[in-house]
Length: 623
Image 1 (cartoon, rainbow, N blue to C red):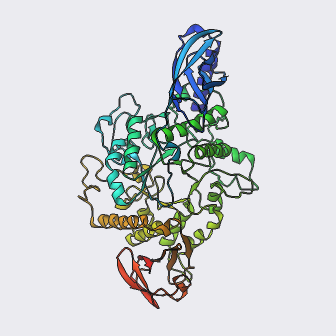
Image 2: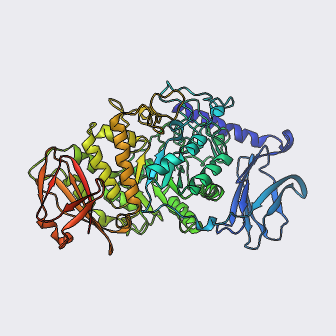
């Protein structure tokens, strides 16, 4: 990392040296204006424009417009940057605002800034809710729908290589568009897409989390226009779109890195300092300020410079960029990467700005920790000891994911192997809103659930049954329906394997069923039944969850119910048939004697006992 720090110092030294040169040493021109446009009628109507060009930093700005006022011209030591704050009045109409940059009284540059009309319905964009089920995609590994962007000459990693598990494989936006019917027919109602923005790195650029341009879709995926068209097409089919966003870090090849706006734009250290990942520090009464600083200011890896959101202009930039993409593309939600790692006060401000602009929107933040005490800290409305309110609506339930895997892999004891799951759910009192919790069997950063369950198909079915009947918002990673695995490795390139049938020459095809094993077909149909049923089960969306303490019979029983509907879920992980006495469940069953089992569409008598076949998940609608 020392060579990276030397590079940063050299870059900054060059910038400072540039300050000493005469202003007219280079022709003045603007090469970047970010954002390049805004919209009339927005709640966020005070915008700080980042203007970039050689030797423009000493200039002053001027605007002559009846409904757009110049609030501030901010100069920074790097003379290639100028920050101009404008205020757009509610009376402003769509059109062009002329920004004049002056040297003294002389206008030396003119920069048009576009004000656009908002598209119908933008202020009321509907976010994802507990009535939704997400399908998560890593776009490079999903479907290659456009061969014309397989080779992009002006990128550092400029061609596909499917033999390289860490390389580009060619999936793109057009591939997602072609697959929307498949996703809808599977029963999902929303699509979460890993980042589509430019990641112009020399290698390992496919994952999307090392952004090099916050306002540009990666050419290997498509264009800003094709991104927006994909969102519109998804919504026309009844699918919401959730974008994966990053505010904590950038890629080392981001254009800022060649000419930093300020010395404190990044969190910089004398030597490379990696984040300590100690996410307990915000609640730990014994934590040091040093440990807190290393968590938030440390870098993930040397190739991902850590952003300093305490810099006011950078904070404005990130908030505006998020709102720009929501407004431009018409997104339904955001999954925010590495939520606890940026400055937490900034994150609260960021989330509040988004939710103020779009009150029906939703954001889920990634907090990867195994204890609900830590995860729940980040959900809005939580009464935290330090008074912190994140303004974040939804959090991710990593604790339940870990607990369920332990339960399903655990051996029968004198109590029950289900207690890991039972105890995890018993801590739901820690959350401010149990319906706004994202639940998932796996994701792009962990081993595939089928691998975690040691490729036990019966336990896989039990896991899917639980996730589709549990409180919260379920999310399925692409390929889960096909029993994707990553045996003997945790390499992310293997975990994010190519979707079957998404690439020319694939022997198996999930879209047509050709080449799939009988078990893959069975798994897909099993998940489809669950997802389709869940769409029409309001008691699962927002109803109560009441679970019974599991005992030595190793069966976990819980109910989902509202005033109109009552559903009983029975999860039997035993590998032999057992008889379940129903007496203790009468507290919720009442006098009901009959139920319809959803997956088999059979009528069951609910009298004294119920015979359970091995490794069976039952969903029984009580009549």
